[in-house]
Each structure stands twice: as structure tokens, then as C-alpha cells.
Length: 306
Image (tube, rainbow, N blue to C red; front, side, top):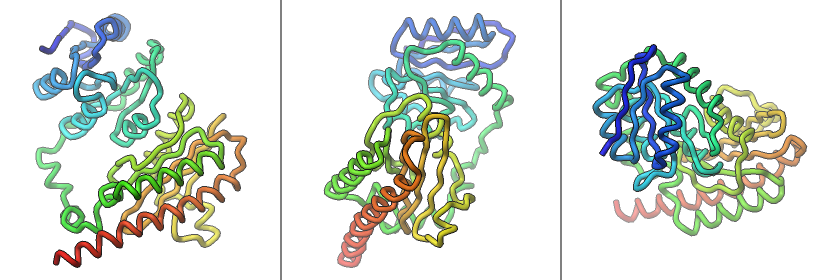
């Protein structure tokens, strides 16, 4: 059963708090009501939260990743479909690289780990409210509006499906070996590979706070608009972009046709850019061959069945 707490406050905005842990729910609710002046509504799991999302209009949500049953990542996915205007902040027990990639790719506003800095959390909520207030109503025919002939062809044509859907177990293992080798060569904090539908194909390493900020920037950046070093050098088989923070650098490489994938490397700023570019290019070439091998098998299978 959903647990709902509503208060009369200075804000008409209501924040949904979804956490399996009762003390955490109460602490967050008291913070938002007393310090922020917001209304709050509480839920303990995916089902409770979904029931409330379907009934009420929330401006933002704070969701714990590890819920009983379906996870906070699953709930974030549902929010993206049902309420794309709602800002979501995820809270995890630790900094999971795999969850962070999925969260930012699915549109999370932030991804925080315990113990929570309550002042920072309130600041993030205030900022998200300012950015999304008033929330624009989602168009009633949004799915039909964005459904193009290209989308239909991608669904029907196996050759145009996201890379993760055409790979077999052996391909995933080969790609994992390549990512592990790259992680060791570059002394990276994190190495990951995702496809155009935001499916995580493989990941090695861990993430820290500074890494997460750079990762979010890298994954939401329009790489097609960037003129990379490799473009200048005449390299057209893949496109690379570099982001640098105070302590960490992020290298993002997009490659492959028609099944485009993105390679992400997060490493210390002490790692020389030339080393990162060199080993990332070697990895890209190797992974591109693996994906093309999977494409060829898919194409041959399609010809036999036609």
C-alpha cells in the first residue's frame, strides 16, 4: 500500500519519495517539507510509486535504486515514458558504474550515493524545480508523433537493430576482453560500451563523484556537432570527443554503421591524451570487427529465412 503525506506549503510542487528504508523516507520528507516548503508523497516500492504517478502530478521524484522487486532504474524508465517532464534524482547504496550509465542515459537529473548530503540534495531539488516549473504537459500523441518510417524499419529489419540485440554470448565475452585490456592499458577508472538505444553492452571499473559529473556531461553531449581531433586528422571511421575535469578526463568515441555504439573511458588527467587515443582506437577497431561479424551472421541468417 502506498504511503502518502501531503502538507500545506509555500509550494504547489509535490515531490515523490520512493525508498525501501523507512528512516530514509522520513528524513527526506522532513527535509523537503521543513527546509524546502514542498509537499511530499511517499512510496516503498515500484508498484506503490507507479500507482501514485498514474494518479497525481509530481514535479520531481527522489528514488532509491535498490527497491524490493523492480528497481529504481525500472521506475526511472517508467517515469520517462509516463511523465517525461518529471525530474528524477536516484540514490544508491554506493556508486555503481553500470547503474550510473543507465541512469544518465535514461534521463536522471542526478545520481547520488549514501550517505546523502542533505544540503546538496535540497539544492539539487530547488534547481530542478526552477528548471521544470511549470512542467510542460506531455503531448497526448507523443508516441505517434515521434514514430517515423525509420523507427518502423529499425524494428522490422534485424540489420538496423541496436547492437546489443544482435550480439551473441560469445560476442559479449570478446567485447568484455577488449574493454578489460583497455582498462588496464590506460589505467582507467571506468570503461564502458553502450549502443544507440542506451543498452549497456559492457563495463569495467568503478566511478567516483567527479567521474559521475563528467560521465553525465559526456553521455548527454551532441557528439555529432563536435569537431574532434580525429576529424582534423582525416579519420572518418569513428568520432571522438574529450572532456576534462579537475581530476578526471572522459574520452567518448562513437563508431560503427549501421549499429552505432559509444565507447566511454574515464581516467585520471595524468594519463596522456595520446596514450588514451592510441589504445581507444585499437579497441574500437577490434570491437568494430566483432560487431560486424555479428552483423554478417544476422544477415546470413536473414537470407536463409527469406
